[in-house]
Length: 594
Image 1 (cartoon, rainbow, N blue to C red):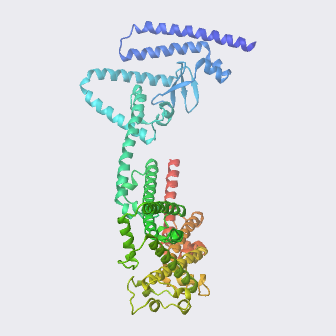
Image 2 (image 1 turned 180 degrees about the vertical axis):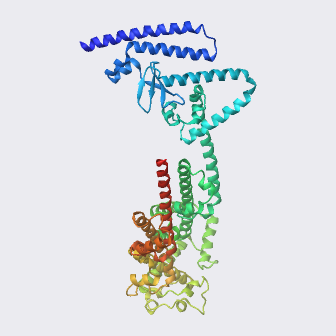
Image 3 (image 1 turned 90 degrees about the vertical axis):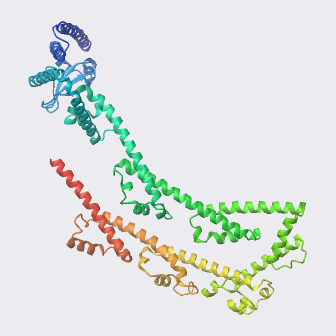
């Protein structure tokens, strides 16, 4: 019951307040007749209204609302809607509520009052007089309009710089950011009634300026990428690309976060595009190689040829799955062509196609004057292929560890004659020469020599593959060992790699070592990040010497003995990072103390 009575009393007080407010408006309308339409009259009306409303509020006893809950207070009075700072006052604001009530609030002392404090009233009177004087002077000096426009342009320019400095974007609301710019002179110089309007206009301008600037930066960066395109190599690592691009204006840009993120995306997309282009080129080469090798071979041998090609390093850029897909496409197309030819020859013997067969016979040392049927030619091809396979099989059986003669591999096709037979040049062992299967082979010396060279190359490739597998099992601590030392570690009995030259393994060793050095560098960088004895001033002579003495005891430092200059560069770059971090912290402390 008490709460109901209290609400009824409040409602009655509110109705009394509305009556007082209407009386206030009537008084203002009466007073308006006594004032002219100039700015001074308007200011007087506002002050008069404020005094009347203050008296009515005081009469109603609004301090009783302090005993009510926050929700009920907001119901009667409203919530703060706008804040207007009173210039030259000590943190005084005029706060207007959502129900058009105004009260005075001191931010430092947290004082709230409906009655205008004396010091504030004096400031407002002074401002009103100054504004009225300004109005009179403006009327007298209309010819200075151009100067005022220039002043206004300077004020708006400073206002725009303030918004940029505070990093206010297009999604910011005037009321939300007001507290951050309220005390700045660049904001206070703007006329009150124009502050919000120009705020919205300027943030749109700033947004457009940012877009235009970013567009120009993107265009310049893309030109730089095209210019430096030749310096990028597979596998197109981002780290390597940055080394090429850094220290260029088009790469640095304005060094803002928005540009850095955009630049990283552009660089990533560019490198991905280059990778795809490189893969397409290798795909095309792999497809051409398959067609050339498979064209004159029996389809039963295609799998072996494919496996041989897939092991070649120049096609390592392609995945195993992609190589198989290309092989399936090529083999399917070639089988389709073979079936088409078969159907044509079965239906009718086209003379042009038959001439093609005659030309093939000439290549295989057939007598041109003699007439052969298609079946005879196919039988000949099968016989030839089976003899080739038999010869390769004998080599694999009898030559487990062939001698790799570099001079022999340089000899070209058709260089073997009656004086220098294949057996004499290649020095085949007696096991092969006495084999009945070998004696029955009808291949000429040049054909045998081509197959023998291919066998030797395959043998070298197999040794490279086995060497690579054994290298991958070694520890990262072995990167300081030479190739000879690595071979001794892997091949303790000196049997596996004794038949081939070291330079055949050198490329594989260098690639493995380069990869392991990169891995060791990353480990050393991570170690330095956690190492407590490295400081921002560690590059001083005495400090640096002590630092190296401590670091030299760690394995991650010792691993990089093979690249001392690069190791030193990693240490210096870490010290540089600590210096920059120290300067930032130092500036922050100075600002806080200020």
